[in-house]
Image (cartoon, rainbow, N blue to C red; front, side, top):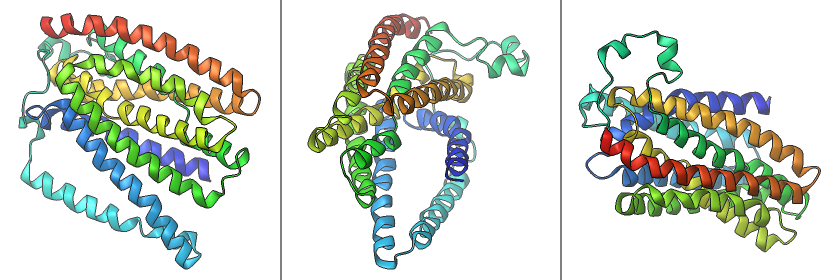
Length: 307
């Protein structure tokens, strides 16, 4: 049941994420896409920071998990009200502003078969290179669920402390998103090369035998995830035609999801068998990701200029 609920939650995110990213890329054109995605992620993580703490507090006061989770209906309702207000104020999000440096697709391409468009037909090769590089970092970044297994099973952390540690990680993610978003708008996409470096450090630190070192690893995990789920998406809007933006974000997320599935399976499998091997596998994958990312970023500037 827990697995089904997690899959349903991930399915919901998959449905809303491409459109959300496209709207955000449009709305952030004037202020800087790095800043736009960074501020969005920071606000998102502030909610993620407060949510587990409130749930833990309600559970502690009432001794009821059901009541702890039931309160989440309140921010959900508020979010829907805000969404409806924005929808009334901006009836056509396509008019928010310019979406991309690349020009719109040719009419004949837009009229091609839907499945070809859905699979990314006509999108530039540099976009797919970047998507694979980003997906490799996603595959190598072990989930917090895997980290929590090590914390509770091997380091003696009680289950009650897990949401507190997670809340702290969410706060670190918010800071990482803001910082890299600011840097992205000033120095460009080369700031993203820090992601595979951080991801490669996570297992060596987070799966250490000392709790203090493991907590530092959780912090590094939060830094990497904060960048990966925010600033790394800003570049997509500069690589694809303006009328393919939402679809491109969908393909980008699908590639990341496929790699994440493989990475999650490998991480869980190796955690029960050989932590040193897990560290080596993640390190090698991030070395490949770093090389591919550097090669891709060298092609990014000519692609933008050509657009």
